[in-house]
Picture 1 (cartoon, rainbow, N blue to C red):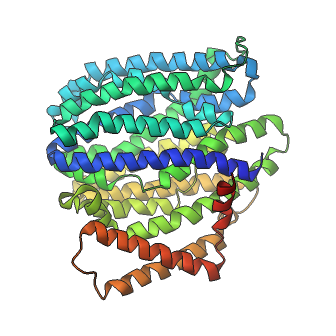
Picture 2 (cartoon, rainbow, N blue to C red):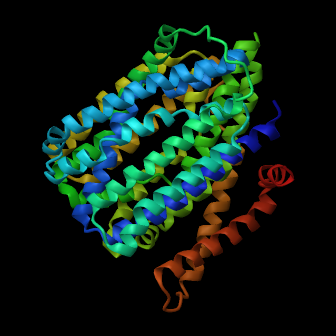
Amino acid sequence: MSETNNTKQAAWIALGSLFSFGFGIISGMILSRYFSQTDYGTYRQVFYVYSSLLAVFSLGIPKAYSYFLPRSPLNQAKDLIRKITNILFVLGGFVSLLLFVGAGFVADLLKNPELKTALWIFSPVPFLMMPTLGLEGILATYRKTKFVALYTIATRIISLLCVALPVFFFDIGYKEALIYFDIGCVVSFLIALRLKYYPVRHEQNDKTEEKFSNILKFCLPLMVASLWGVLINSTDQFFISRYFGTETFAIFSNGAMELPFVGMIIGASATVLTPLFTRQVHEHADFKQEIYPIWRSSFEKSAMLIYPITIFCLFDAALVMTVMYGEAYHASGEFFQIKLFTYFFKIISFYSILLALGATRFYERVHLFNFLILAIIEYASILIWNNPLLITAIHVACTIGNCIVFLYYIARRFSVSLWFLFPKLTILKTFIASAIAIGIVLFIRTYQYPQISDFSKLCADIGIFLLAYLTVCIPLKLNYKKLIIPLIKK
């Protein structure tokens, strides 16, 4: 499979993620300004609870598409997709019931009585949305990722129309917004079920040789890893929500957002590489020689894209938060800055290669130890210092430690040194170019911008940084053409 074609496939997914991020930001900007901090915090807590349950009770099953479909004949694909989707239907119904019945307990746990009614309203969503999971893996397996972009764009537009715009035009509350969100999920559900079978719509529908037991056996380590992963991702959210109140949680949740464009880059790479690596392990005896060059090339490209964004956002974090969410969320910039350090290490999906190497048990154990260490240290920090920023910093430090452990394992499996995995020269060049570009922005700032809005200031900073960065890239021979030209040609 050519590197150019892999880049093209990843670009389609990245395009969808870009629109998803854009619509998500617009939605967040509207809701932050039209809801009180208490109502906005409750709204965000609903999605925190949902995402936590989703990751645990999906049992890692959506990843089964990327593992089993590349190994199965085309004439059995329809039945395999149906079998995995049926499992997700059952799990979705269970999570919906759990949300409805356990709403009061969760509200008490997070010390927010309003959360009980909100979760009741939201409870149909898991049954609708869990069967849609894994769509990206199906379409990426059959190189149809442009439909991932179309689906993502369509569903985000639906979400914007159903939630953010009614809040903007009709000044509805967060409970009414959740009802409209439920309606949008029905439409997204119907579109996703149609697309799941699109790549194999003309193929025969023979019975798959994969049994439910095989699927569940594959998913069990991933389920356990997902459980620990959810607990890892939820620790700072839980402690801040429980011990610092809904308003602080609202400020934290905006600042702890995913770095713009980074999730799109990492997610696109993972969606394309997982079925590709799985197929190569299945078909090639000397699969390491096939996988390693592609994985390292993806690492290098991700570093070229992610590091400049990370460095700029570190520099302008408070302004980014103020522009996105309003002056009331200026303090979110501190949380944002701390979270950004994660992306100097977490720039590529480790899951893709660990799955291909059959290291799911190792993946599970690392998450377990990470959670235990993280929970103990974060709780101790509350007892001693009681500072939400410190909780966030501890979470970032443990995430970085996780990444280093995975990189060390991958290096051992490929019989190379840890440092050989890093494209060191490329990383050094991006740091130098970014530092010079930031210096130029600071120099221009010494003459001060005229009396303009925060949005205009941010746009000016971005424009100056990009112009300076791309100019410095020329003598440093940072070749961004190899990322852009293949996509333009395609």
